[in-house]
Image 1 (cartoon, rainbow, N blue to C red):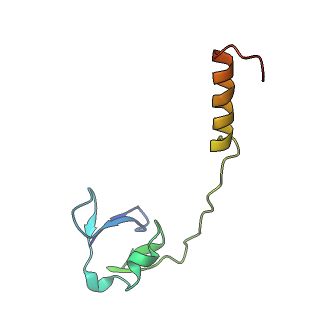
Image 2: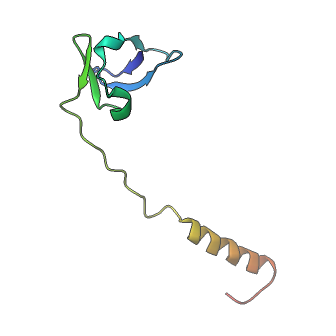
Length: 91
């Protein structure tokens, strides 16, 4: 398995088939059984040639930006544009 590491030897990405530029080869016997199922960037770290869970890993919550328009809002704005282009005054 190929793994891409950061400066703290945390695993950023992996490849079972093919190569990743800048990656290192890890023997499959040094990888936890549930590695693929549990994988998240930074969740595992390479320590003494063995892949282990990163004790410093912190789950990052994905925040939804309130400024990003929803599909519903985009549809409303599209309708307004169509009304304006067709000369309609009903807003």
